[in-house]
Amino acid sequence: MRNTIVLEKDWTFYKNPQSESGEAVTLPHTWNAVDGQDGGNDYYRGTCKYVRHFAKPELEKGGRAYLEFNGAAMTADVVVNGTKLFHHEGGFSTFRVDVTEQLTEDNLLEVYVDNSDNTKVYPQKADFTFYGGLYRMVKLVTVPKVHFVMDYAGGNGMKVTPEVTILDAAEKQADADVTVELWMTGEAPDVTVTVAGETQTVPVENGYAKAVFALKNVHLWDGVEDPYLYTVKAELPGGDVVERTFGCRSFKMDPKEGFFLNGRSYPLRGVSRHQDRAGAGNALTYEMHREDMAIVRELGANTIRLAHYQHAQEFYDLCDENGIIVWAEIPYITMHMADGTENTLSQMKELIVQNYHHPSIVCWGLSNEITAASAVNEELLENHRRLNDLCHELDKTRPTVMADVFMLETDSPMLEIPDMNSYNLYFGWYIGELEQNDSFFDEYHSTYPDRVIGLSEYGADANPAYHSANPERGDYTEEYQCIYHEHMAKMIEERPYLWATHVWNLFDFAADGRDEGGKHGENQKGLVTMDRRIKKDAFYVIQGILEQSPICASLRQQVHGPCRGCDGDQSVLQPEEGLALCGRSRERDERRCTHLQIPGADYGNAHDPGSVRGLHR
Image (cartoon, rainbow, N blue to C red):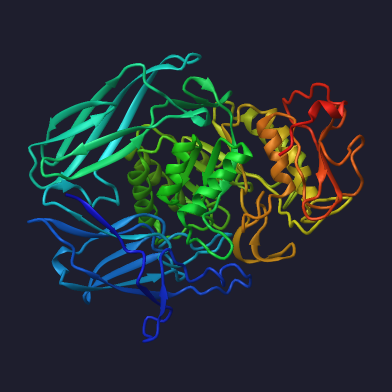
């Protein structure tokens, strides 16, 4: 029988591994929660040590014991009772260590974790803090002699592939063939597999088994409207059991019409997310993940780009459960490293093996802005070809994608490697004018009408303390951030071929090298502050755009001049001006309004203030 013990408490942390004096900590933990967020680009990057004792677990005859690490940033060496057992490179994926042969009645576990600058483990150059630590959970897992594979890329020995046939898209009628593949360690004659109330017992040959289930009138995983999940359970005669949830859905990206889910047009409009928070760094609790997902849903987004690395399983699960379409990627970012190719491949392998079953994930990201500090040469191209081939070898159901820096020429051979591309565009913020976003995509789509293209990043920084009656590019005001997103919403709405668009970013996040816009160590492009306490005005702008309906909100700060017709208590819509967001200030009794035009919204009797009463948030 499989058993899992969570090793959350009783750790001692040593910033200096040679020191005899440590600090008691509880997981999750990072040593950069403070210095990685305060600016100066001087946060500690080095090797630290985590120590704890654990008792010998009960083992069945021939059973095995594994230590499971869900995230150790960025490299880790695992030592048990003085013997180094494992070295792992990559700070965002699960890995396991077989400790069976080293066990005594009382066991000393030492984990050396290193986020030092180096030349082979990604990421090494990017606009975010590279936190160090055991920032996700550590577990002690025991399994019987015959068990599902524990040693392959952090997976659980199960692969679930639903193939959906849409019979009537409008009526959501479909059938599905669900293939369940299993890998075992030890001699087992057969394995019992259950899906949707049907059970099959199939033979095991050379440690491998496969069962196929034909599901008629399948309940589709249908995005935010109906994210239905099935469960598959597999059991070996000796008692080992593994389970996965999965969803049945079909999707495609059309170069002219954008994204389709289950045979219907389903425009993907959403945000990106970094896994950090003020005061906690990347050591996030499940409640923090749940709060982030609640904010995603409140915004009205239906897609999220989980940047720029593998996120916690808990958050992928939340995306499945909430119907949020996911772009998943590895931290192959900004600067190519000649010694880092194998690391990109191992991180991609772990990402796919550990997350293949999630119906929310629709693509694998090869890299992000990798040409920002790298020349396009054969070495870079070959690294991407190998990644692309690996993705298709491990997963024949999902396309690959690249997030291209805006300076990358559209005729670059880089764009020919993945199945599709998206661009990170910042016209109207870092450089140029807002209208250049429009012309960029017009020219691209005209030149390459048969290529799938999207918008992987766009945004403008805003400090909630900064306001202006005459906002302009680069002033860090909330007013300019609203103007920026209003323009981008219109640009996106007029180009339905964009397969997905992702605001950069949902939350402000730590970038310790930054010192700008009145903040130290933060990228302020978020729609919500880093501590999740303040939703910026642009949040409500985006919310109204995504919901395509008149909205109102009590906004927080003083604006220069009231909206015509506003009594300060309800929103007012002006047909010739768009939507006015008005209300009493949360922090002071002053009026605040912002005008925007929501593409596709039905303004109805917008000149009558009474027509929008009851729409308060």
